[in-house]
Length: 400
Image 1 (tube, one colour):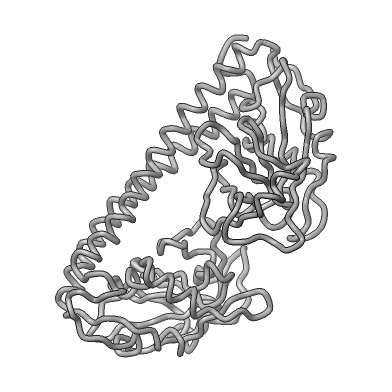
Image 2: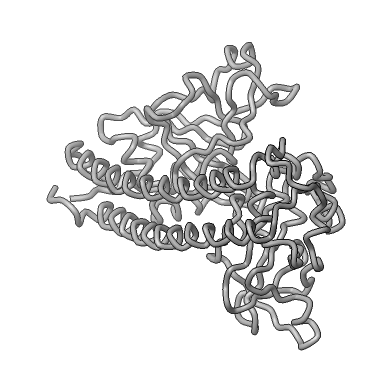
């Protein structure tokens, strides 16, 4: 039988982090913020920030320990949670002021059981009841009184649930690793066929992206809506950092005949994210679908000419070298970074024979087909995982 207990009755401590007066730096002790906690309950350690060692040594709160639950407390990603287990890569680390550290040390409940409940749809919904403010709002310590956790007083029962969910998560992680390996394969094939863009070892002739473009076009500024419209409209959130498509949040727009000539993207054309945060500006992807879509004003469409294949240009810009070029070019404007169409066209690029580019594009298409199969499998695994969590916390999986 499941009993509902307030999270506040199970909590040993809830701490928020801080940062030094001089701000974070490029070395020292890792400082974990909301940007390092992913929506799937895991961590990402890109763009890590650091605090000085002496600052860390004097901290009275916010030091991360194994078994802690980290919760994003404010901003657009409020409510994301992650569990610090033995795979956490840092011996010493701290949270910043945008994260709560929840410590559970109670004989009634396992910390990872609490994590899984806060990660579940029902648990996260309860946690977010405390959300206040607009997009930049957040939660307070009061969420501890709002979240009621269904638990069995038998730790063995909780352990069975944690073990089962861990195994289900392992399958998801393996599938994600397969997808990531395919992304790396694309980059490996690119380097093998064309050589490192930084050194051009194959001595291809050099030019600029404008030499490979038939035309560029900014997207529409028409207001999109959730409810309907003739065309789905691609926005900056629909392009992933790695150069793929995410259609989970599509809006729609109506275009007249004249507008469709300008603001639709067709198969084989490229979209470039010209305005975003500094680390995300320049996201690039090839549109590979038969039915055209509209694209919004924060994007630039590039139509390749007879010298180029969009797949080649996209992987070039998404390479480690291409990302570094884009990052160095981005100009900050009122909290956002920008690279306009003319600046995009001014980027230097080597120009291999079109036939070789087309051969590369054929390989990319095969990799992408396999990737799509893996993605479909991942969606099913995640559905099953969410279903398991829902049933687990209703007491439907095991006899207590």
